Length: 139
Image 1 (cartoon, one colour):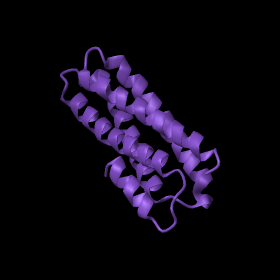
Image 2 (cartoon, rainbow, N blue to C red):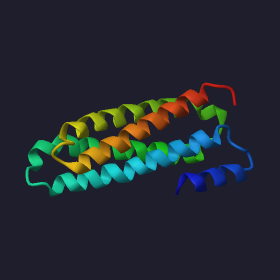
Image 3 (cartoon, one colour):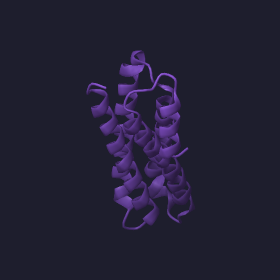
C-alpha cells in the first residue's frame, strides 16, 4: 500500500488519527524497507562469496521483520493508549535500520544492492525518527 493510499485511508477513518501524513510516510518507508532488505538478502545469497555476507543477510532479514511489524502495527494503531508501545517499536525499528544500513554500507562499494539497501534503511530510520518527533508534539 502506498503512502497516498494510507493517507486516504486515514482521512476516511471514523476516528481521524492524529498525524496522518507523518504516519503514512513512516508506514510507506517501513514497507519499502521490508521489500528492499528482503531483496538485498536474496541478492547477497546469490553472490559468489556468501560467507562474508552472512551478517548482512541476517541483518537484512531481521530489519525486514521489524519494519514489517512496525508498518503493520502503525497501520492500525490510532489509539492514545498504544503510544508508549508504538514509541518503543519505532525506536527498535530505528535501531535495526541503522544497524542494517551500517552493515550494508560496508559492502556498498562491491555490491550495488547493498548500497540501495543502506539508502532504504537510512530513509526508514529517518521517517521513524520523524514520526517519533511528531508523536511528541501536540496533535
